[in-house]
Amino acid sequence: MNEVMTSAGKWRRLVALLFVSFSLLISGCKSTSNQTNVTRVGPSMTGPASSKALGNANRSYNYTSDIYLDVAVPVFDPGIPQDEYGNIDDEAVVEQDIWPQVRRLEANRFALATKEALGDTQSFGKINVTPNANVSADVYVLGKINYSDTETVKIGIRVMDATNTMWGEEEFEYRVSQGFYRDAMRKGNNPYEPVFKQIAGYVYDLLKLRSEQDKQNIERVSDVRYAAMYSPEKYAHYLTEEKSGFFSKDAAIGLNGAPSEDDPMYQRIQAIKARDMQFIDELQDSYETFGATTHDAYRKYQRETLPVAARIRKEKEKRTKAQVATAALGIAAIMLGKNSGSTAGQVAAAAAGVGAAYSLSEAIQSNRELGAQRKLLDEMGQNLDIQATDQVVEFNDQTIELQGTAAEQYAQLRQRLYEIYEMEATPDTQL
Image (tube, rainbow, N blue to C red; front, side, top):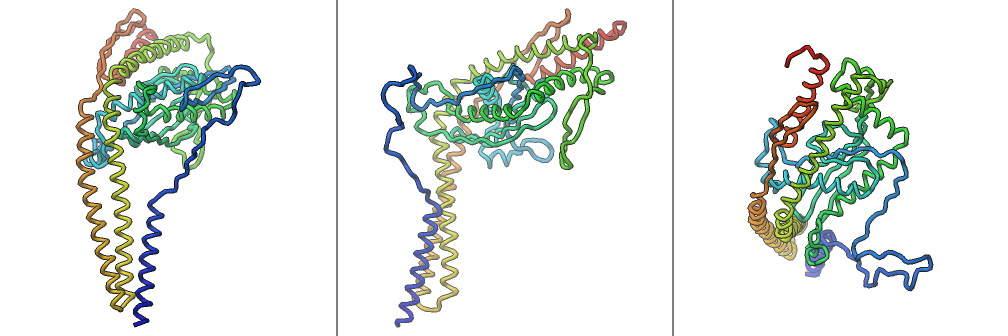
């Protein structure tokens, strides 16, 4: 009898230990401060100090170089999964809670927000949102939306320059608090603003690592690459390509010379480049208009779906905890059943088995609720879409009509500018 009681006691302690261990595993430790953030009181001894609104701490930048590199921020990759044939993977779209219209809208808005955050650093030249990465620039900030549900956003960023050298890449994650919209002073603010400030700070830090010689070389390579695009037979030989490593797929581009600034053909191409960049500059108005047009609808979408997204996250966490508990109790049931032939051991094993079944039932119920909330998010996002307007461009007494999306219009402009260049280079040719 004493042996049975001793065995039962051991197994009870084992079950208790399992429960305590998993409780610690699935619960986090939090520490809070009950004191104010003020660490110094009284008037400043070094003159009046500027005051900032609470919760509005901004990073300061001190760019001392005379070289300001131009930046292209291509519209972000919306992160819509594709199948092996390049078509939208509808099953993956559903599984990952993606509504394509919303993602495409965010791809434009996020690029615009990144441009604004980079501008706040006052460390770059022109900063433009562009249809793609084929435009001429010194630095390229390439973004991809890895996750977005109006509560949590994950953005992958890769920074490259005109020499095809990658400065760095990193994923940025931010979660919007449900208390964000309670603060009246934040009305109209972008709840995702902190993540774009982080991105701008990251790009700035990478910029600070470049020497003055590096930046000058980047500018020269950018100019010559544009000239070589129009006249490769005349300017491509100024460019060199060298892989940075054995496993590198793309080669870094360097210079072994440069065309004369007095070269008539080079000057003609520079004039074309100026019109090219003017189109990109004018395109900023379209992106700004798009941002303003979609502002209210998107903010409402964010505000109304934030609590839904938060509930989904909590349901996922609840499901994970239930699955962990199920696995723990299942293991306990197997261990107790195999290692105890006593009556007490069999009773403990049965109890653990019942607990496992109950936790699994909770996990299934969480999945059902999760499905209903996913559908609600989809319904809220289905009316958001993007539209582009036609444009007419004038260059050297030529009228260029552009239609379609911004990317399509830019491709059309490039083609027509090239045709005009060819026609001026061979004036006897009739196009």
